[in-house]
Image 1 (spheres, helix red, strand yellow):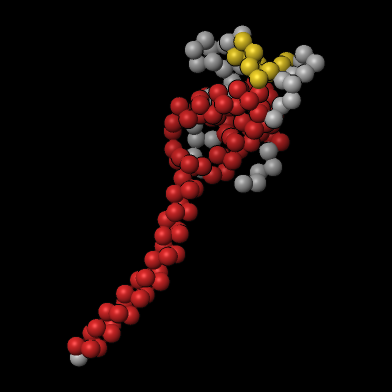
Image 2 (cartoon, rainbow, N blue to C red):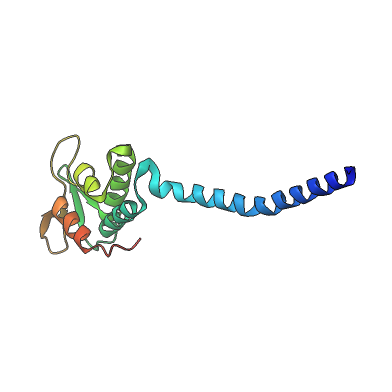
Length: 139
């Protein structure tokens, strides 16, 4: 009987050892996924927001006008990411991101503008709304 109990414990330990690997992998994978959905933001909305930020970062020869000062597209993307991070759980969707982070200065209330190569300007809100409408909806 004692031998039977030891054999059962050994099988149980072996099962736990085998199951531990996939469990650890699952836990690690869930930790990697957390930044994309931090603050309760659904993954689909986080993907849309990243698409919007990238759309600014990838603008060629454009300037992002913030409080009357021109910034290059890379600086603009960095600023938008910082505002998104600072907004915490207030941003729950791509539309919230446009309204609360990407449209106007929180300090002056002045709207952000984008000056494209050739001199044409557009309010950032309009630019982002158009880009969001073009989003393919694929995560």
